[in-house]
Length: 174
Image (cartoon, rainbow, N blue to C red):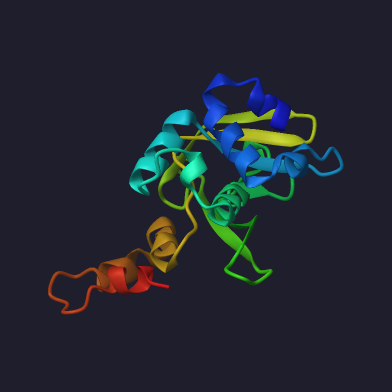
């Protein structure tokens, strides 16, 4: 996967981030098959700007590691095998060993309601890469409520204009 990313010009920001995060050896491991949702250079530029970073060198390593691991599944999943629902990423929640989920909606191939899969099934010797148009941030409760159509009524109820509490902001908190 690392060699594939290095050879792909539009993934140079991902390569820089993987190097900074110290994840090169893990993603180079031929004994494991991964699925990587690889953000393009434009996706990284948007992520950096939105989080007030000038470059990947400004992102704290621990944050960068978890954000990158949130793009990786511990098994190979081709596009034809993707189903709508939750899957475990290699990112972990806080100081726990509990893996963070992502919600993939096959109606449009969208991850967590905000990252579109734009190219699928790029084969590597240790898995498969799908490119995405946005960095997949660490999710909070509203991320899944908005991404999962099963929660549409809940979202409507919590975002009514006549409420005195902004529940979306409240649920975005730690």
